[in-house]
Length: 364
Ligand SMILES: Cc1ncc(COP(=O)(O)O)c(C=O)c1O
Image (spheres, rainbow, N blue to C red):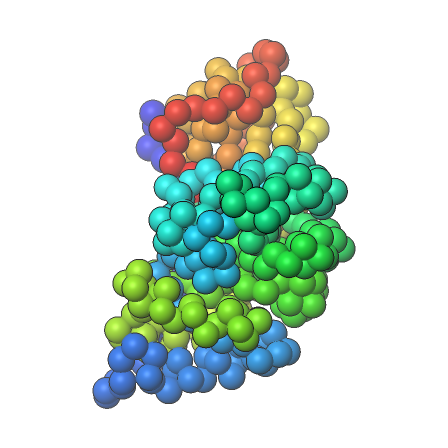
């Protein structure tokens, strides 16, 4: 392989936004109480209440997996089931952290398009789950990934429809917002509309992928959930002792809409690439490009040619590549990818094996 010329492996591969590094340096003065007893963490509660236009509780956590697993552990009994998309990160890529931290919750995966849950299929799945039967896992929560693992964005109506089904059956709604900034930037809605106004009870608020440093957060909209969540977090070792640094960077992240500008850049990069490669023969996009991720189908030898040219991406199957744009994806990287795909597409069309999984790939 040539020297890497462009990196589309993941939004985890990017840098930390300078504003957040500056916030860490500013917070690095004097002393402050640990475990969230500091002024930054207190301010974070107020700031997020403003951002979401409702009282919330915010818990900074180390990873998106911790945010998901501990959110769900807090809202599900150990004999519960969480309904999610077959493509949901909790189902494909978190080593059953939900099951572990909840003491036994199982995932009930239901199909839908482009990583979404279909509300009607959800209704049918819950109706046939065996509610009240002691030999069945009891429906407890629904997990919505926004934006989805396949790069699509739920409309507000879709989130609301899914939430309505969940609430009608007494289930809580958890949103995996590892890429919620990309979704809110795309939808042009308020954070409140994207979440609790559409029925979300508890949110994994992603930061790391969009310019953060080692911190995501759990945002709780339903007060009765928040009473237990602190115990789950502490028991899991997911409470920062020097919490001020997590909170200071999260404050900077949402200051003056920075989080949406960063995500907007990544979304725009993906949209520009999609527009330029869509007309090419032998190239197709297997999911709508609505956030910062592109799934590109090409002949296997053409994808290999991209890799040999030094384009870094995830191979999700012989003829399927995942390309992720970051807040700091450069114009040169976008041009390099489009040029390489244009050259590779001219190598001739081959039948496209669709969505064949490669084993051993780590999904980020
Ligand atoms: C949709 C989604 N949710 C959750 C996560 C988990 O985040 P982390 O890797 O920080 O545990 C990821 C990470 O790739 C993700 O893509």
